[in-house]
Length: 261
Image 1 (cartoon, one colour):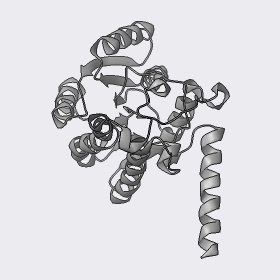
Image 2 (cartoon, rainbow, N blue to C red; image 1 turned 180 degrees about the vertical axis):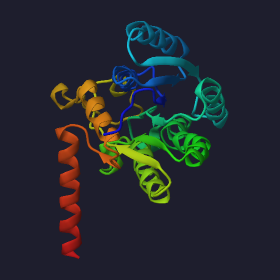
Image 3 (tube, one colour; image 1 turned 60 degrees about the vertical axis):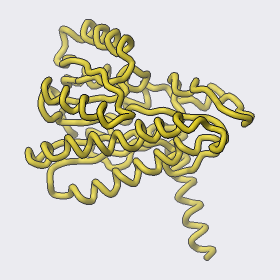
Image 4 (cartoon, one colour; image 1 turned 60 degrees about the horizontal axis):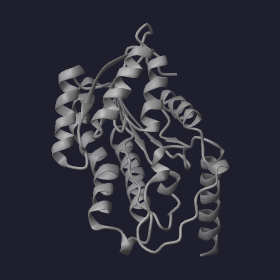
């Protein structure tokens, strides 16, 4: 299993629930983390709290970078900031994400386009910038937060599902290109997680029922299982019983459909 002591890890969306939990657990494992987010005050507070909590441990917060990766300029700023702090990181965790609820034709155009920028185009852009250094060095790891919605299409969340299908395919194709180059790829497919993302506003006339709490996964368990999969070098990680069940059901339906043709 991969040792993370002393490894430099860049985490996007680090001011959010999953991002902060990734940082905490990676710091406990001795990693050197760089935190990135567009929310300056929340990011600064998170960096300060994490630095204080883990000051006497093996892990360390190297710094934080404020950048809006929904735009190319934000991706460039994040890349330059990380290179100044630690050079090409050992691992890039593309955790930042947005969700829109409602009928697709009723969503504000700028909302779903921003979502596609953050969820799909930014991870591709950041990978494009950091990957050459990893390949030249002969090692590295790129992690993508997809979703169960990335292999099981979700109504009333069309842009979100589209972006997660896209990042899943990107990670799989990229993994094939990187065989033998020392750079690993991991796609993670969480079920719904108890974070503020679930509180994203709905738009238009869609009648959306709140998700029952018993169907929400604990972010600590999701991140712990995700990190375990990352350390094992897995391409696909399905954290939690709901994600595993959704994957099994999706495969079953695919097999039955194929046999029926």
